Image (cartoon, rainbow, N blue to C red; front, side, top):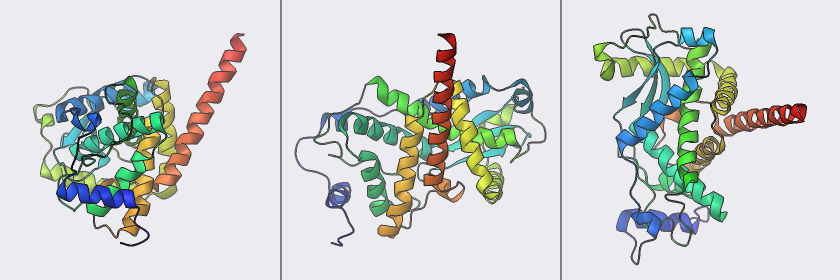
Length: 295
């Protein structure tokens, strides 16, 4: 075994392939959220953020909704227009599932001081295959750690992570990185069906938007501020960026062939995390100033 492979990560990879003997940790037995429940989280977060837009932006983004790629293999998120010309935020089911697993790992890390987010990243970098259903943390992953399953903090982190995913793409739409020709508040009958052609156009647009370069870090700043305005914290967003930042390193160590489309269409995760932290600090400073002014 290469010295660059962490022993714990190697054990997780073996567990994924052959199973882990012994008694399972209680957190391994806890049920996961279903796809429809995760989709509802995304709908809730988009509604919250649309609700705090300024009037001009609200008019520009009237009728914006979330569409879901029924893809359980590739995490992706993108701004797009549907075939009726309405603005949409595209999320894959794989991305929602990943957000839920990272939220859980992050919640446990907060309670125990562990690094499950980073370990899950390394696990996927080592064993995930392109085109295969995204693997959850393997049996025994939380063994020896106090489970945060069922605690409000895990639900908070999930909503924060999904809010960030939605918020970045909404910021791209608001800024005009993607301009939809016929935004309308009236949903069309075919809007619930996301077609192959709509997907192809969305991916072309996502690639074009990414080529715009460093300006995309401004979208994270905007997304963070809007999240905070809507009442969400940023711990879940930072946990998700921790995962992707670690994955960008781990896939080089393990020479992984699996590259989430999300990473191909978004700036470097370390840069993005810096933008989120800076925007969070700015919002906290404004809140402190407001409190002092009232005293």
